[in-house]
Every structure is written in C-alpha cells, then in structure tokens.
Image (tube, rainbow, N blue to C red; front, top):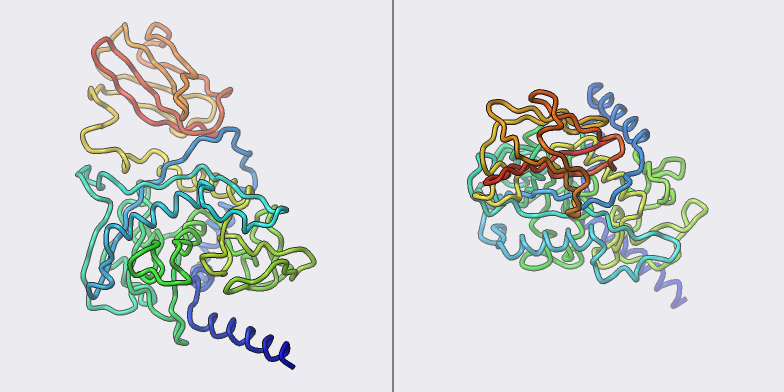
Length: 405
C-alpha cells in the first residue's frame, strides 16, 4: 500500500510540475508557421540541402555573435549584466562539452563538442561600440505570447547576430508559464528571428529560478534556432516520428523533472539527458554527435552570413586595416575563389589563406594573378571558415571567407 501511495504521489508531482511550466513553445509556433505554403516549401528545401550536405571534414570553431535584448516592466525583470554573462558562459560550456555533468549521459549515447561558441557583440549594426545588451522598458505583459517583443525591439540584422530577447514571456492560457521559444532557421520575418526566454529561466544567477537555473532553456532554444527538433519528432509525440537525427532514438513520451534511467518508450532506451528534451536543467547534459552535425550544417547552409559577421570584432580592429579596394567572390566558395582589385596593386604583396587554427593553407604572390584577378583553386580545401590575408610591405588587409563544397 505504501509503495502504491508513493507511486501515485510521484505521478501527481510530475503532473503538477508539467502543468506549472511549459518548457518550450516551439512546436506551437512551428504549427502556426506551417499554415503557410511558402514556409512549408522553404522547410522542405532546407531539409533536402541538409540531407545532401557532406560531413564536415574540419573541426573549425564557429563563432556566433549574440545580442541580448532585455525588455522589462520593473526592476526585477531588468536583469543584470552579470546574469546575462552567466547565460553566455552556460551556452559555451554546453555547446563545447565543458559542462561538468556529462556523467549524467548513459554510455551508449554520444556527447558532442559542437565546436560552436557564442560571444556578446562588441559592435552594433552601424559599426558602433556596444556591450551586446539593449534595454527597453514597457508596460506590456506577456511579450512572448502577444508577439510584442520584436515590435518593442526589432532584431538586429540576423545575418550578423543571434538575437535573444529576455522578459515576461507569458502563459499558455492554461496557467502554465512558458519558458522559451525559438525561430526556426528559415524564419520568414527577419525582425523576429531569434530566441525569446523568460527572465525566470535565463542564466544561472539573479532571477533564474530552480529547476531552470542552469541556463539550459536557452541551450535548448538555440538548438531549435540551429535546426534541431524535440527528441519525440517533428509532428508530435510518436514512435513513428523522429527528429531527423540518426543517433537520437525515437521517443514516444515526454519526460519532466529528473526521471530515473532507464526509460523505454519505443523499444529502445530514451536519451533522457539530451538538451532538446523537457527534463529539469540539472538533468540535461548533452547534444549528440548527430545533432552537432545538423547544427553545424544548418549554420553553413542556412545561416551562412553569420560566419562572416564582424559582430564580435572590437571597434578599431577592422579587418580591412588599409582600406584597399578588392572583392572576394563567390563567398562561400565551392571550387574557386576569385580576388579582384580596383586601382593600383602592390607588386610585392603576398596573398595567404589561413585556416581557423592559424595554419597557412595557401600562399602566393601577385605575379600569379591574371591581370587584376587572382583565382584560387579551393577543390582540395576542407569546408570551413578561413581568413584571406593580403600583406604589403607596410600594410595588411584581411577578410573572412567560407569554403563549402
């Protein structure tokens, strides 16, 4: 009798917990977007590209500039810079497998270092110095459920920044506080492309409240922003649906709190520790290798321009230090990268292509050009981000290029 009572109590606790918070509003938002034929078509096109994408040969670290937009009604919601910095730190630990709780992941599941990092922007869209944080006061409640967050503060250029809004998200109409939501990679409205998080679940200090005080709500939503779905699939909780990632098992149940291992819902063990599930922050610990590959391919295919962003470059350290007039195209390059000059050319200048690790993978002189164009064969280079550097005797120019076969 005591065991039966305990089982009923635990089941009721899970139910009450699930009813207190709605972990993520992504599925509802995706359902809303899918009413558009154009959105469905763009989703199918993206999925076809992701299916055909080759596994990236390099482990280049992708850097994503972040701007955090704080929208507040009172001093409590106007979270501190320290709380924001704690979230950026949590993101980087989770995405780089630097979190200390990887022991929660069962041995049969992979733990990926995604080689994706995040930095608060140091320059705004106009090229001015910024802290990477904006603040706007409002008297509007529920800025997430009413879609007012991006009206109050439209997104900075999504080709250069990951926009994160923090404020009073709101409830789902049944009394459940919503923790967060993300835009999909093919969001049609550039002003709302990004992630919105409640101030109650952002970062690891300040207003972040247990059990959502390890920054994993944002880790979860940024996963969506980079193309990941929930473990139970794209179209609902079903063993016949999946998340389009090969090494995450199909899951026919949604788990809350901190469930004990093992749990089986579709004939195989469920990955309870995955960041894309709904368990408490303290019980999340990993992205899989397959999820890593999908996110990195989404960055390169759908959010390409972010990899060329100057958002994290301090003002005063511009890449084109000498202001030489040259064009690099196409960028991303597949088989050939062209460098074209306008005006006079320093015949003693050297051209170098440097990978993300700092190794020079290509070097030549101006004498190898054809007229005012230098053509670089990139067929043998690995996919990734490179720095194209042009060095004269007393000057240096450089810019980022992407190789994507």
